[in-house]
Length: 137
Image (cartoon, rainbow, N blue to C red; front, side, top):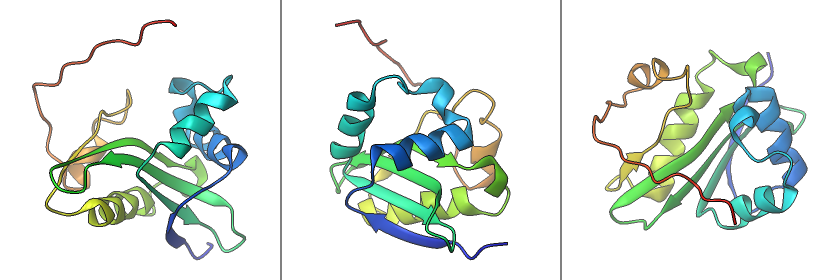
């Protein structure tokens, strides 16, 4: 198995982002047909942490928005299906939280089917999350 290299990155390409979203299965819930939205998602993130194999391929990514003092919203956590089960997701969460500030409360919304993963990596479920759905422009 490849050695995994973790890094906080300022910028990655839309193609790299789209590729890891697809290989993780998260693409089913992301605007893959709108590269301009994917680009805006990357440009407006406060923190990007990647996991790359020894060939430089992104095999995991976390994308977060934070105020660096009170809260961090971990919007995307994606790990290539071929690399799942190796602790990459847990490491991405830990590195993202550390980069944003451990004094912040890390918040995420689990993808359907991933709910059982998060207690395993030390997160607790919150019963009071409310969402306003997206409105078409």
